[in-house]
Image (cartoon, rainbow, N blue to C red):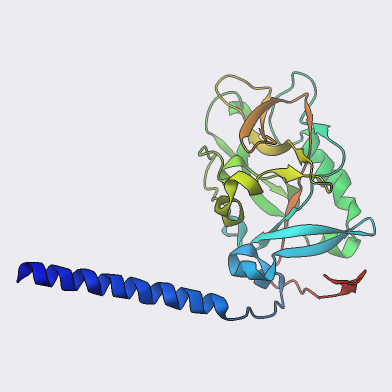
Length: 251
């Protein structure tokens, strides 16, 4: 009798699991709603919509990936440039510290690259509070410093490629869903490139900064080395989006 009850229970569980799987498949067959705001287009909102928008840089449209609808739980939508910037840059001067704030990548995207955007867009970009390793513990230690930036680089924890976190960072689903492919940065001709993160190497090396290799790993690169950048920034979730026909394609 007991065996019979166990078998019935197992069949009920299997039947319920099958019904849940069928329901999930049916939900995926429902066409996605047309996005009206940037939040609707985020990868973790409905990835079937393509999670890509085109943003003008110096008059030319560049694709940006809409990664998450609530970055750092600050209520804003995170975007990252799909392709690396064309010119590689060192992280800092020779033998200098790998402290992120005021380093060459930080200054370049915050003071130079941001001016590639139209003034209206620059005004919309949200100043975001992000974590970095504090300057006095770059060499060793877990002390956190928060800085506010309109444009910034990501951390290794957010890509799901390393488990060190300076504080309360969360993995970004876009990367963790296919972490061994999507973390690779590429040029427009599909060439893989090493790109800088905003993390710093610990364990006694103050002149090593974090980077993502072109074979999907987290590297510790000398600050004097030149690698590529993928700027990220946040916009309000209510930002309106429009679909336009450009060069025969709907964007």
